[in-house]
Length: 153
Image 1 (tube, rainbow, N blue to C red):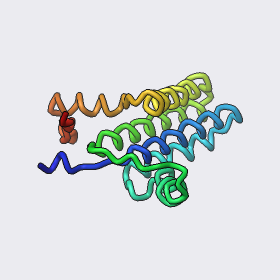
Image 2 (image 1 turned 180 degrees about the horizontal axis):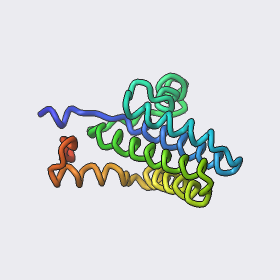
Image 3 (image 1 turned 60 degrees about the horizontal axis):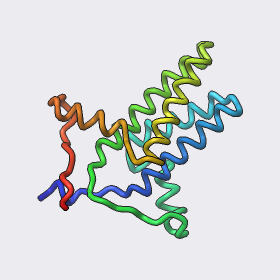
Image 4 (image 1 turned 30 degrees about the vertical axis):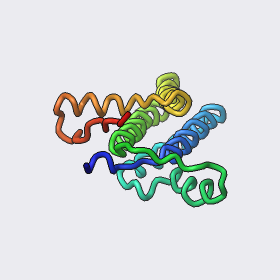
């Protein structure tokens, strides 16, 4: 069956989330809107063209070959994870607009939301964006074509 042969390396996802959390937290600490711009650009580019995902490239070309992070390849759909990252990037665009527009509390609040949701995914294994993707699939929204993969047991 085609859907059960789909694989996603969750270690690559976790490294991606770790970079997002660390860089956005640093952006807040040093009050750098430009670092938020960088993270948003990386997230949106990686969503549009997965092969260009910078943080996943660090995992694939540095961390994994060095043995610092072991692969965790499991049966999964990549689309919900890309949706989640893309939505996070869009939220960061809102944060950037707020920060440049003088609404710093709103801007940093949106940055905090992205950090929080990435942390929930990284540390608790719950991807809120994936949940939303699968709910949109269940409702038949066009563009959300993949349903959850049934895990054999």
